[in-house]
Image (cartoon, rainbow, N blue to C red; front, side, top):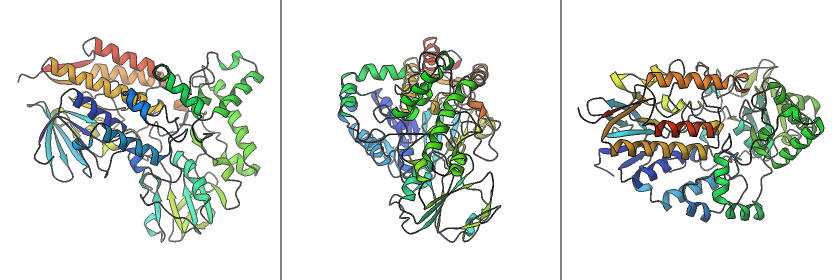
Length: 537
């Protein structure tokens, strides 16, 4: 690849989004290069190697649908694929479509500046390489920048520390160790049972308990696989026509209080037995009506109390400050039962907040906990973190960091006013993390590649969102969010887990089909809400 300095498109990131983006653009006869900071493909599934890491959507739904041949030939070994299997899948995709020859690994993009005279982006890497491209596609991922621990004294700790978002390839052996796990989000809920099975003792430091539903993971049911194979195209289409892009979370057809309490409990039991996100789809109003939502939350709370033997511990594990689903529901294997083990203890940071890290362990307001190792399971700078680490400058040298100082603003989560020919895959203002990411990614990549093709066919030089369209879309995203349960939680959907980050609800919760239809309508009207200009200068 050495010597090439000009491309039709530069893509940043080689995860689900970047790989498909490259494939689509190459199909159109365009030149493209992916820059990827890791040593291999995979994106979030390259970095998140912590114990128990696996997808929270059933494997067959969390996969590409653009190639029926790929879909048919890959056989998943588990209902919910583990990180190693997902990484194998993405490596298979890269090889199957011969993508590696256009990927430059171990290279981080440090800046992207728009040249208004040439209608091109100038992209610089950490190796000092500079290339230009007509289009720049940020396939940087929504959960790709770990949230850094900010506890006083963290550098003084004498033992090893690990972040779930940067787990070493070779793994970590906790045998015989006393381990502190700080955090009880998804990565903690998946890793704690695994660490507890190995360590001498695990102390879990919980700031806010989370709702978690069992995965009931295991080998896929042969009958389910045969049914999927026979009806693959129809089931993919059905998924794309659900609010969350998921067949398994297909929404019920009646409201919560249209049925008896007995029937409601039976439906929740049925969905608990299915596992995962199925719970949120039980009734039409669970994400819009707090009173209705409370019935689902109480059901799960009762399940937690039934699993955890110590009633005091159980009560600490029951979420009480936010509606179920307003933070991403976790999907677990044995999480609550892990607190029945003699070598696991829970520290409620509401009762005794962490004051700092000491050379020997973790000090709270009540006492010091001596440990041999610390695991920071404190999540990510979600949705905007990766973009914030790149010096992105649009028209007039406007910095994206300044443009987004009060929170991210986009049109359709795809483009930003003042930043021509810059596309974001599953950016803020799109369904993104409130959707099956595989479905959301494919829709975005296809829309972007169709737009680029439209531009080329008409010899157009630049496309960017108008300020008016962007303002109206941001207002719509907030208006829709305000009709739901989501703003009632201090979640990473609002950036609430990152100190100093503006509190703005970032994803679009109007439902995937509504969003997709809006995107299609915009394109059909000649990219309504976008300013298009010719290549003539």
